[in-house]
Length: 244
Image 1 (spheres, rainbow, N blue to C red):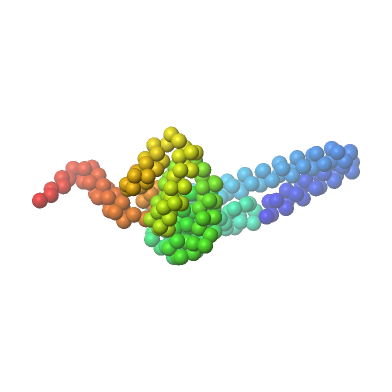
Image 2 (image 1 turned 60 degrees about the vertical axis):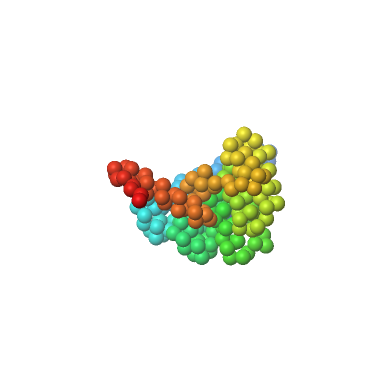
């Protein structure tokens, strides 16, 4: 990582010069200070560069120009050697775009490098592992996702759904919801999901709205969303829906 190496170089030069010209103690102190100051500067500098890349990609997404958004994101690869986790962030965002276009196979190639801090992308990666029957490390992947998103109720509900519906493991689903209830005892969705599960009743994941629909796991839910969007459009246009 070039920013780390350059920062170390700056710290060493400052430390050695001051240690030789003044005294060793001051040289060590100011050398460390120079290292951390330079490292923070470079991280912020390249973080702003990367933010500009994401803003350009987001602008293209808003225009439904998904291919151009992906190309814009790939421009950010140039910063990969200068800052940490650049490729992971870019690959995650590209994977999310491709997943939203239902290009699941292509998306999985990028999501394999996804960053668990980006919750939606890593959830899509976990789903990709299941669909591709690569579940040998699935529990570790899920634990990693939860570790970086401890207080996000959607993560726990989605994982519980995946355990129950995709992996046929109700024990793990219950364990996930119970853990969530301990961490977020006052969260209404978690309480409702856990109660429904304990009473063998269906919990409507569409309560989470757009987050849930992005995963494309529930066709019935997607159909309900489409019907709702049609009704809202008809209402806004002043069109009545006549049923016979």
